Length: 124
Ligand SMILES: Nc1ccn([C@H]2C[C@H](O)[C@@H](COP(=O)(O)OP(=O)(O)OP(=O)(O)O)O2)c(=O)n1
Image (cartoon, rainbow, N blue to C red; front, side, top):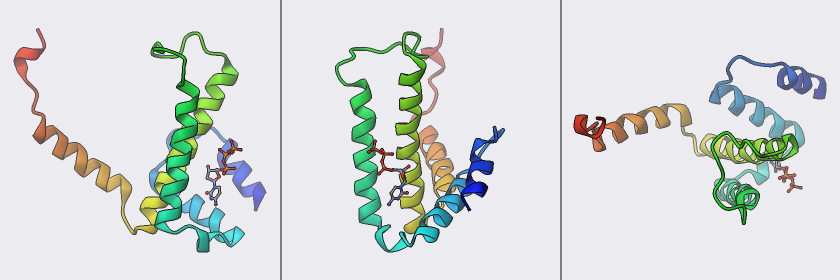
């Protein structure tokens, strides 16, 4: 089983879909008997906890330049891990709520564009 994960995850994928992540996470939880703990509320709390860990990385650093030019590779790897934890709990939360997160996000982008139309005069 672990073999399968290692294979799927270590391979450099060109692109990964939210559905792929959802399916892998559902299998991960099922294989461990963790579905009973993955209620919407528990996953939300886990998500918020990981957002806290993500925030700690930036805490007290002051403003950080885009691309993180002065960060070590260890710092960047830590950031990748915490961002991933947030994403993985978010994907699981949407799943146990029976929602299609990818579709919902696309719908929201359209809604955002309607709410905030481009102002041609704002780009000289
Ligand atoms: N019941 C669980 C427990 C963990 N995970 C997954 C989702 C996250 O990607 C990661 C979180 O694992 P940890 O709780 O061990 O948290 P960290 O990886 O942040 O470790 P630490 O808190 O020691 O830094 O594991 C999960 O899906 N369901």
